[in-house]
Length: 315
Image (spheres, rainbow, N blue to C red):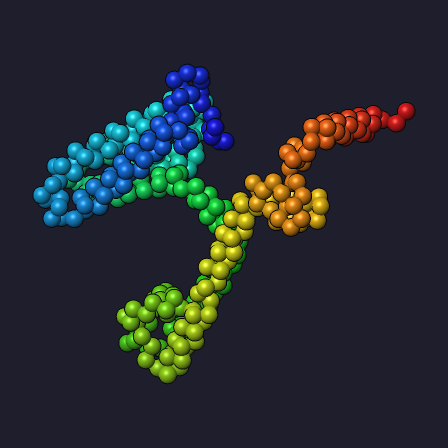
């Protein structure tokens, strides 16, 4: 079952929930594959419709295909809400918002005047591209990336703040040194040059002409090369940490104390000690297994007695 969402009832709603929100049955896998293909096809139609030559030739076909995709996604969202115990909770989630964005632009076109609102219509057409975000729910490792990004937010923010300070300082210096004829007519323009230089893009539309300005450019480029890998390293370290947390357990071996075992491991990698504390080792004899269970019951009884003694105030 899904850990976040639950079916709204027995029978048809439960079966529908298992098909839409789970992927461990042939029907559920078939639904996921069909939905992925539909999402990709809808995004492809939007992209082709933005090409004037294709739109002039197959514009009507693109129009009806878009409405077909919109109706299909609308029905899918309605079915999702129907089979859930708390539909509003899904609508407030990330995927619920993406589902709404995937169908809303096309329906809004019906109530927006056409000729005088071409810019708005174009914006709504571009918003349909966000249907590609729905692909994230089919990528199991996507959660690891999101968790890693969340944990590295503080470090990345500090990095960006440092870059912003450097860019502002160098931009102010170059604006002070360079003449207006070189293109540095304002500090915001100099900030644009500093960002382009620091990221080693180098468009060449604004170039320092004085020796001091060129020396500052060299310093900015060298600093860019030296710090460009900082956010990548921070994020990569968090991704590795997430993978380790997902794969490995912190449970220490009772025999040797080693604590880096895979979560599915039953025996210690170093000494071969049985790791599962909830069940006896399968290679034990019946008498040994019965003795293990008896010892386990005695431990549970002792724990219960200790808890009761702690809860009972001293007389």
